[in-house]
Length: 389
Image (cartoon, rainbow, N blue to C red; front, side, top):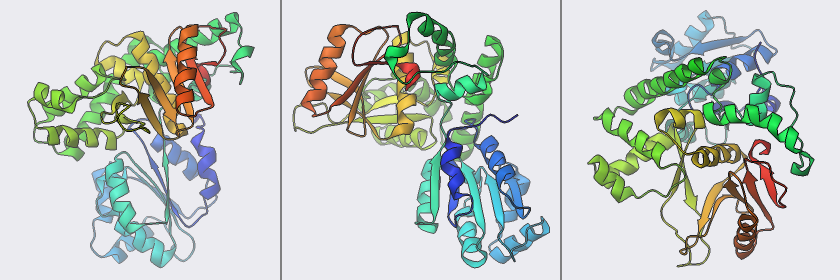
């Protein structure tokens, strides 16, 4: 049985719209499963599903004459005399796919559902070919709410933290600790044992490195980007010193920036940049780095509990909008600003002084909404639990 994902409710209204639907995200987040579920839900027999990770399927789209591509799809069962639905998985492996899609949309009103795991490629090529004619949805690892569904848990998370008693918190924490330790990749969540989960995480990293870094990235020294990945995992939640990283790895500063762009473009990392409003009063230049998943981060290096928790809070907030951080020169900071309107500070066990400091910093920015995000049980005001985000 396919487990539902929250994003499906956002995509479903566009099943019959003329725009192409593009689902992006890190490898193994469930894009293929989601695409197959949508395929089963589209009420038409005039549809085809092709996995472009298979080199044989790529050949169908490598014709310079797109009418030949149409003819091949007709042999596979499509009728372009009526609305045809074309589902293509892992489109980053076919460089001319955007042009093919545009041609078939323009001439035959074909409806495309596409997935890909390289946003730098998808955004650049599709912005030229299908400007204003596509909807892009990013699929992230499981949220904690989705994780509970995958675990067949009957737990219900209240909307108000004041409704969570200490015994209720203990019950939720048993599963939340597993979620923090092993992350939100669907295939990992479904594994029964710790050993299986670790093997699954190792396989996810190997698959990413082979398919994205080696095959798609085509870097001259793959061991350098491997070392950069480990180095970044050790710096989760910290500001990046690009010059220092370049010296450690023995590569130029522009090369470091190129590698960071690639890792962010393939969804492995996300750089959270600083918010600055008053010139000279904040740390303005260096981004902070977070990984796509706490389980993957934990397999790359040993991380403190607070670092894992902060990365998980990042994962919970990033689907909700634009993230930034705020830091004064005196060191006081806010971990996350969401859409420049809401402030969040992650603490394993918050103290009253943490709430007061966040309130003061939020006030400086004119923010009325602020919360200290706690892992431990607390009865402090202006706090929320990580598993509620």
